[in-house]
Length: 262
Image (tube, rainbow, N blue to C red; front, top):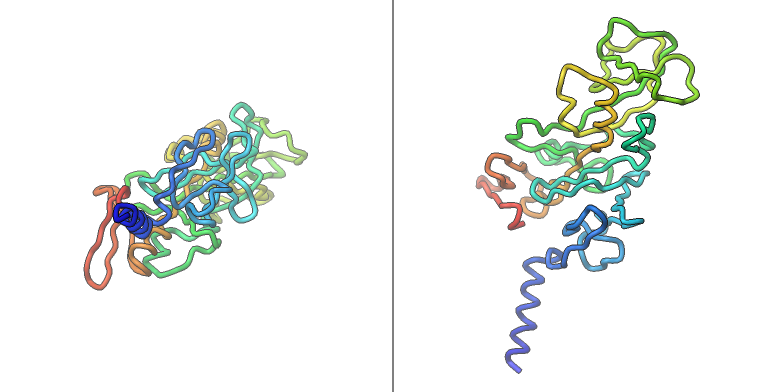
């Protein structure tokens, strides 16, 4: 009898220590490890409801704001999930995102916990900010513009090469990065703004093929804010890519955790 009681106590203690992390991982299509804080729809008692994924036709889906995105990857090492618009097609350069976002729709994980802000879209996913990373920056814009005339002398305006079969009159151009006032051409109108985290756009030479590849790659969002809140409370918290640790300062002391010990 004492062995049975000891086993019950042990299971209870493990549940207290690991919480929802104790659930076995689920899988769907290319996403082979769906673990805390995520869960598949129907896996009650595992993960968090705000990070619930669904599996349809062997494709992992995540609902964000007012749209449903394909999940391309989940990185539990740096706390990021990569999403892509479901209407984009690898072999169709004229395929475009059906949901339009920019980084301004999200709080950065750096600002969120340095300035004690709450992520502004209600699902505890933020723009990633990783200390010490040499190429991991916030997602970039890709902007499509419809112009009434041909634009010349501006390298940032990339001709889509007749890929677009929309019922737009005039000329269609794509632009990577921020659209600042000095780059804006009179007679052009913004038709689409999308996000990408593809680091290959960090170059001085753009092509529409490159931009479409970037859209197909998708964009990263982070659940670092939730982990920071769990471990550190409302204080300065970040992921250090040099030491591969989550770090925060609380009451004058520094704390850190390896991702696999979270």
